[in-house]
Image (cartoon, rainbow, N blue to C red):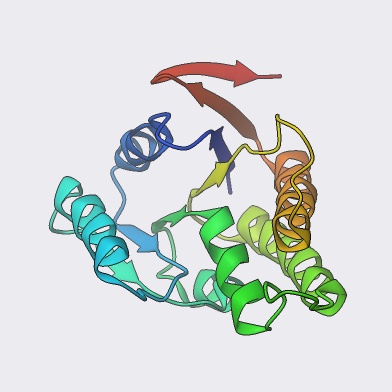
Length: 179
């Protein structure tokens, strides 16, 4: 059906915008949260996001985002929050964020999974909304792990953007519709 990409920098307001979009169709909403909570600060962030959402919304914590999309109830609106969190999780689990690590295999896996996710999202009978960090507007970072994350984020965001029916950029809580 429809794939919408909601891009923005950190704390830009992209999640509340995406949540408002998820309410629009009036369908059941499933929040796909592709992360593992590893500390108290992350737990607090997750709790704050959950508290801001309607109680009727289901949450699925799953790293296999393509499988989660395929397993979603037909016609449900899927809200994946977020692309960057999913990528961090996959790279972390693969050891690609360690000093001196070769993240090429994990990066290739993420790029392929993004293509599969886009294809499934376009075919499924329900709206799919993906929140994605828009990062890398500054200097090239000194860390190889950060450069890898930024490169893969850019590649996967482009993949989803090409497949998306709609792409929005959120800056300071303001939305710009991208052509």
